[in-house]
Figure 1 (cartoon, rainbow, N blue to C red):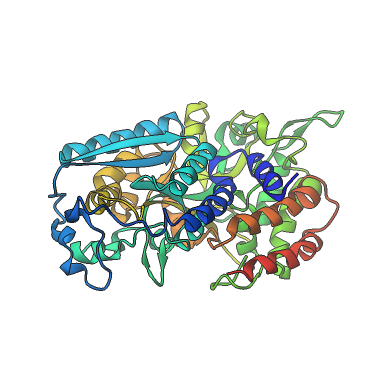
Figure 2 (tube, helix red, strand yellow):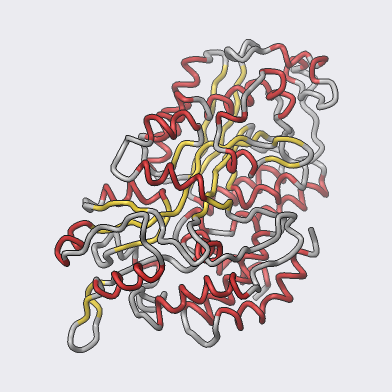
Length: 468
């Protein structure tokens, strides 16, 4: 079995779409091929549409294509392609936004292609390698550097400057995730944070007050023990807590930050995950499974068996804001609280999805108009009604979203203390190496402490970051 096969299989074991690292792996292989052929990184817009030529960063005012105003697209009739991932409900929402955009911009037709997470990246890489990339496509934050570094994305800064587009209207961390020293290569379309979900009926039955912002790690353990129900033969019928351990975003990265540690340095050149504070955060998660026995390990509750909280088998769950619609559909009476504080205070993660434009698009004005619309209050209000992700627009976040359902304000407030999920070139290789070690020796089978496991894989992690 090749390294490619091993990593691909490891990635495909991950249940939640945003947790999968497969996209970056496929990106690396296909983008290298594209770079060799020159089709994706250096292809120029067709001379047959000079009004749509890509702008010059140095002198955008001289480009004919920069005549469009912020009020809307004013160029000739064009058709652009938009590619995204999601389930049936999410895709219905995306199509509704496309319909609204086309109504406001009748000279632009948007052809939408959509799929689940893994096929999405596979198809995207094939299209990029073949010189047929979508004009606009969705981009996961951690995978962004592997695309931008290979020169397949259009710098949007000339358009931002031309239109006086205010980046300050969008969540700061989400904007930063698509910003490099060379330009702005995408805008955040939506975002997600991680919080504590709780089953109100289970808390009421036990006579326990609902979680709130005063909770800390000790309180979490104490209440989770009270809400874990076992029979005389030791079988667990109700877990106090549930979370997925197969990706940092679901819980362990938050524990690292709450314990005063970090994952990588700000310049992405140094691993910080090996510190005592970082390892201590991950150790707390292992202890929840094997010491406190309040959270099922992946062998007891494998990811392919579904979500224990959603199925009414766990009283609490640490997971992302993307689960709101799922839990509503499951008929749960649930609430949302901030994550319990760690020794170093409060922290959660934020992971945006961006909208990016292909560098080879023949219709950059139309593509930019569409990307800009996706971040508008109108489109963001449509997006928030789906409840499977949070709007990136601050006006919508603070206004209609915060009052749109019970717990929405808690999610919106979490952005203030959120850390960006790490995003750097080689993220897939790095995260797969670390997660494989943690899965095998910390979370699935406690053969090692978190500190020992990280120490064993750290040389490999160091060699990956050295390629930056």
